[in-house]
Length: 255
Picture 1: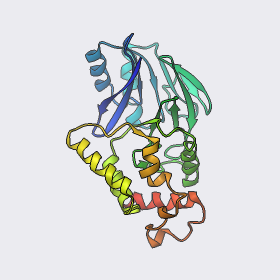
Picture 2: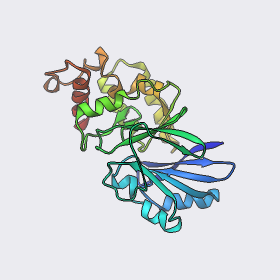
Picture 3: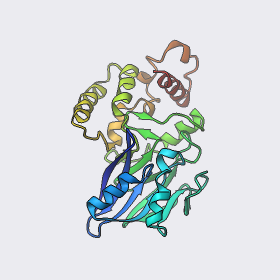
Picture 4: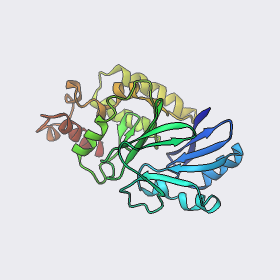
């Protein structure tokens, strides 16, 4: 039995732990800090067996060197084109890996960074900084068109698939989503729920892809209502979905 559990890091990061509850073996996703992972392993009396990396940014990778000091032989999976030098098992689109008897498929999702990948199983997906709940990552390296095509790769993912992203940005993202679609009742209902979660210091994650399709403006750029409230100065060309996405992302950058 594999459980996915959150390890809080920095101010709003989650390091996701895949834990085999029978053997107490653990893989962690994007360990930007080592100390919270070590504390988690000690609390669970668990053994670290591997690391998954979605992209090279420091808040996803800075804890790896310290973790390897006590477990130097464990595998570090990550994108083949990553500038992060600590990857031992480079991955490309379509690769499949077995983690604690869970099959994970690799999806290349350039946009936030050029090396970004996500890990998809039959029931959950680690999306790093590609998709957040009600949001998406900033375009730090890639283009809007690249990012839109990356997001489109999730169109066939089942509604019930759990979405584990790396940041607790849900409430801030919902504030923007409310401006983008003020008449969307799903957004308003989700916002009330998220406010309750945050008030209890409880994660708003994981989300589901059904939820994201209902509330995430960046996944809804094919819909007419996604265009309706884009500021005039950003709406000169909304002729294609990726251009609607580009306008939404530019609006969010300064929201």
